[in-house]
Image (cartoon, rainbow, N blue to C red; front, side):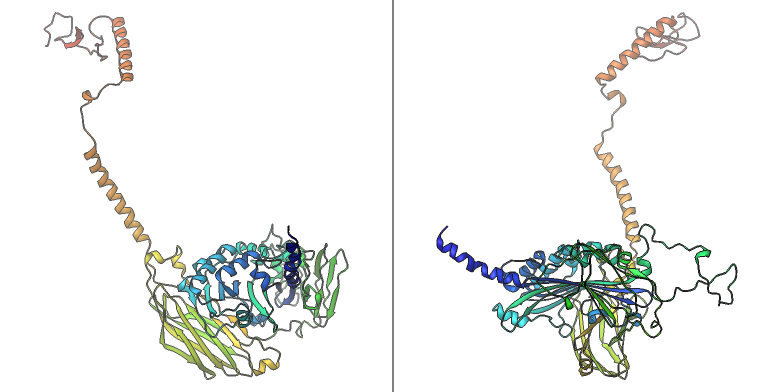
Length: 628
């Protein structure tokens, strides 16, 4: 090797060493008990890599499989959601992370891509479909929209374009699949993107049986660029899992998940009831906070730490438990655990090579009646439902309620399939406290593009607004119906973005708040698929009978039995039968009762002469007149 080459090696390795220092990975678990024996668990996994290392295909914690897809499709920022269930704002309060890491039921995807986005979008959804074992390849042009006001980039895209010397305009594309069923097949690829692959750290708690048995759960993958003022950019991927578990149901053993009634002697009866007796019992509630632990709720303890270095989480702790200060919490671990206690929360740091568990025994709190669960009120309540009857027309009704003493400005987005044809002249915003400021509308094209409706609305304090319009149901071709056609067709959830204002900024809530309505089930005119089946079967039967008979007449040749040639085997059998017949005739004796040479039996009144069978008149001898 030349000396000049050896001297240039350290200089070439300097960018990689500098990039290695900027690689980081952190994870955090947030636990918060909710009313009605529910538990919120929020998992956060964050990995970063320098953009120079990303451009040169040098990865340490950033998943290479996803990075290559982003490079091939020229995607600058990506947001992917898998959601199941409904967040109960009336019981659980405001949404976690201000709704920025949740999506509508099914799968939701939006991304900022280069100017030539149509081909790149198709490659992106097909690649992500294979990576996450989802049906994202069905997000075609008919399910894709281009929102204008609903989404803002979380990363510094303009600075990234200057760093890359890019001149093309980035475009936003958005797609939803409300009928996608999220299951373990999506969780497994999600965990494989993590450095510890779910084998250590807080990701070891993620089990498909527990996650998909939750009352509400969502998985999110967010990739964004972050550039500093000096021009240095990093690429950040944040994977989050949020769920609300029913503590009582989650602690049931997997081998016997069906609850069984307790014996009467083990039940504490409420004797204050008037109908209480020796043979009747009204069970008394346990009272206080229900006892639970990480191993009983998630089925296993945390298997050590996945601290890979390079990043520091908030206060350097991995787990945050938000409970009242008088709540008893026991830490179960083989080593000493660094922890911090403050008013209303506890923080813990995971050990490196030991299991970690938290145990909260059953306890009656004095502050339970005065609001141990301090729930934050959401900025907006929303609900959406279908109206009307019949198979031809219907209506959409959305109810928006502002519970706060200040006005709210929201962006309302609907992405409707092409077979739901809204009448825009019937669009009406009713209610004394609502005002429509802007509207963006893209009409549908049959089987090519759906409807895009985006509204900018101002809702007055403590008021309710209703959005209504009528629509027509299209008639599909029989090949366009799914196998479960009578179930109905899923309508994607509406996306609502609550814009920040002066009142929310004064309260320290200067970020946008997102919420989704529930998806809807639209019944369409459905033909009787049994009638075509019956017609096909009857027609096939008639054709088979007619064609089979005519074909036999045309192809078969009819001959006499005597004309059929005798095979070699048949000749041998005939000779054997003839020999047996001759022997039997000789044994019986006489002409009567003998068998002819051809193997036929000679009946009474017949005689064999010269190998021929002849009839004789009368009953005896050969003296009678013979019949020639």
